[in-house]
Image (cartoon, rainbow, N blue to C red; front, side, top):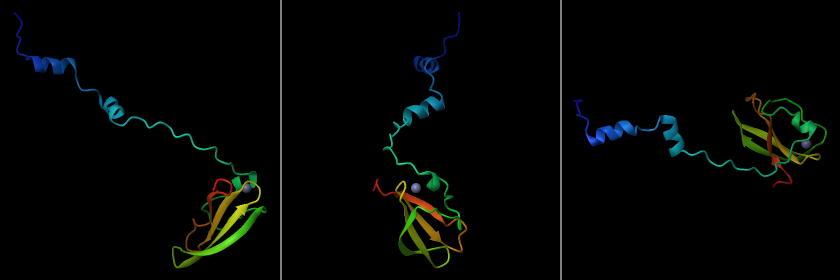
Length: 114
Ligand SMILES: [Zn+2]
């Protein structure tokens, strides 16, 4: 006659083990439904060629200079110049920070999307 030392709760626990971690995590953190981004305007060819966050890289001929502003750079105030592309409406900031080699162009957004 087999030993029946396991109680009802123990045998239940054996029958229904905890789900593995990955299943558990999936249950606790369901993948958020992907947010469909609004149709983002795309950069025109010359804008796509701009290397962002790299100082001393050129813009392109169709960028129209907008306003200047001062901002706090790595060491003291720097000048940030805003440009807008006539072609695709991209708005760029150019940070002229001599102390930061990764200053330079950064895409702010698009004129039409604002
Ligand atoms: Zn452009």
